[in-house]
Image (cartoon, rainbow, N blue to C red; front, side, top):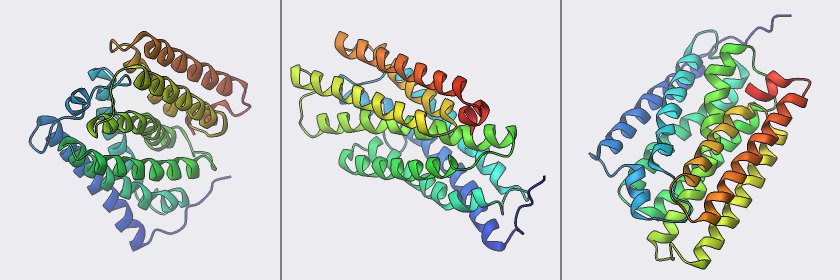
Length: 263
């Protein structure tokens, strides 16, 4: 049976247009930030505040995929057939807020306002978690929605989940906490174990888990391959392997494997 979307309203158009404009603005600000015109690049600032959890520079390239995925979602959501759908009404303004918070984070982090950046990325994590949670309660309406909507948001939420941990460590160093030594090493290993536990809980209970897990595994491998202390590198690899195993097992054992994997 075909499910008809409610009639589109002016409010739906305003919301969808706002998300699209902000998605473009997000890319522009990210480009300016990466070029050094409005601050240093994310990888540069992170490298200047080294911690045992510092990821390799290539790991930050996932931001390009996230921005393009968010733009694809914004274009999809503004289509006449999509604007009035309940899923977009429940998440659209939340995602608009995320597209405001992200440029603010780029400006704060790139200009080394570390405390402000930490506050912003925590807010971004809360917003994305709210969206990801809401989307987990209803299935996508087909492959297009899974690829253009559910997957980009899952990837974004997964990366920000890990980036928040990395950002917290960098902020600590910027504010005077030690970035090396026994205490820093113990804190890093503990943070990795806690992150792995949280991510495994998410992929065991949510949907669209492939994107979420892939982003965190990407970041963990970035940490492990960045000439970190052996204990951190091994823990990061074990965490990545555990997340991959839990995710694969959840998808393969589910009677709705496609929904679990892609939403």
